[in-house]
Length: 632
Image (tube, rainbow, N blue to C red):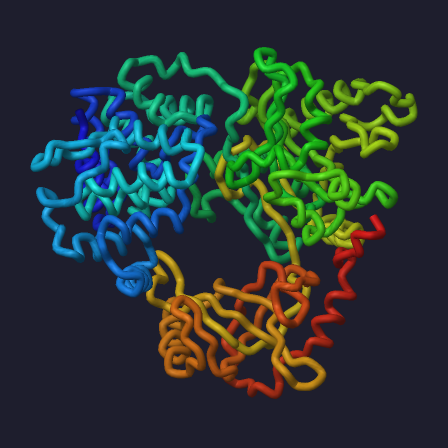
């Protein structure tokens, strides 16, 4: 049986290797070797190397967060809080920190490491310590997912760590946290599987996409059954993403530049060529509003599971329980569908979207009561169709997917609920709005073809007047590429304004930024001249600037709270942002959404930073400013 140590040693090797082809070769060799003994083990090997405790289609979760894992590390290693905190600050990673402190009480030799309690199912002979196998790790993970109490999960984690060497502990913790940090994406593992099994990588990727099971795809690859993979509902497909542009002219240029001028993957070049073939004149792209909501996929209509509906977020978490109205609306659908779109807070009286700051109050809630449903009504704004009538539609051009989506919405508009009047049943999918008339919960995002920068600019201004973020442009001939931010979709979102602010606090980063103060809390001045925090930013500065700021901030620390420091308010930044929200998170009563550091303004003294009054002015100028929920 394959040992977890084999995985840990390979992961360590991969983390130190910069060459992509060398990484792929190493993975392929290891997977092939494991597969000789057990194809099932080879599947687990690839799954764990990708940082997944369970297949994507598997709804189980470990439910072991950083606090539980940290407690287990201290329990097994015997290290102090101070030692683990210092190690974590150096590495920005719990697994690497654990490796450093492992055996800090003299138990570094695996042959004398503490043994797991028999209650964990891992009892050993007094002086014999077997290495952890992949199957044993899988069994422990299954038990953790089924455990009803934190105490049981803690005992299982402790049991695994008690049998682990320092290197195994490092990668067990990384795996349980879902972040291996070895510079290996799943796509590279899929390539290595194809090399090891002697099959086409496209077949491996297609099977993974259809069944959302990397381990299962490994077994299919070695068994020669990749072609038998079938689409399953109720696992999220990757979301296609858009690249940002700053101006309408840049958007036009993105669609009309010749492919040879653009450094891109071959499939992206083909998408661009397809888009150019479509444009007899101008851009020939679909233009839609860019909504300030929550990107989501709706899965429904499985005949074997009548009434089941699942809603998935962009990070592939199931969020159905936070939006029961949408689940209720789709529960009557009887044809298998996967629809891509945006969850929006919705003001039915004005037929417009609510700001994200309002919708955000529902995100992550395990239970949504009637009061919340009344305060923040929601709709699903559909803009793409990914699966229909047993067919995965991703390879089809957008124009065809759009036509099929329109036909689906038209069919679903015929669905009724008891007591619905004919005048109500004119739009889409309906569900009761509390105890009132049923309301439309499924909406079709308006789209039109545009062919010029002037048309894009006018559409952008119209979208902002509707309190939406901006506009999206999508090549009419583009296929749907899960997880890709390529050339086929672009988004135009202009910065609302910039502010000159002063750094008041700094936080240590993670991963590559471990040991560096890279997250900056910043403030403006109020009427009395007092500093009031209005946000935190970490993007936009170079590595050299971060290093310089770290040394300066350390030298000008007022209070050291370990991971966070308050600092002398002397360094001024110019920040851009998308919008301003009212928020009690910061002392200024506002929060900047998506702040980005444009530059360090050492030329500006503290007296010249912006004021809270200016933040209020920007807030009031927004068409999508926050609203009083009591008026909804």
